[in-house]
Length: 116
Image (cartoon, rainbow, N blue to C red; front, side):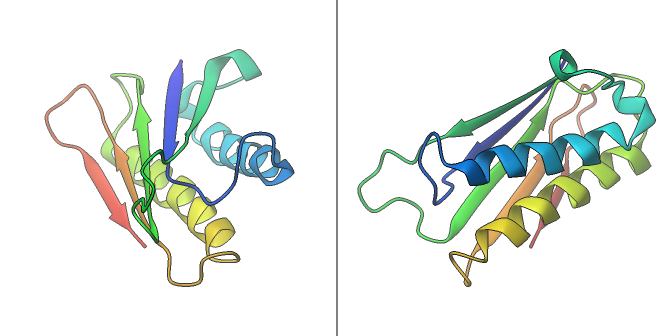
């Protein structure tokens, strides 16, 4: 199961924007065949709250974890750019100066990082 952790979003638990964001992220992941996400149980998206009073301000971190070992570099790059762009586009409607860092953590030692 692919896990996507998103930290420091400007919305609280239960906000409808998170449901929309989930659907958009799921569509990106499903568009990559080597991700092997065919049903809802194959993807877990975690929204982690920023518990610091001052927080990171305009910084959002996205980590994509537990990808299949067979996923190639091009597909990892597609995931990083697609998921990162979706988060960036949503957050900048609320925080125009936002910065999103999307990292694909994978079994080999080279992570893919995209910054918007």
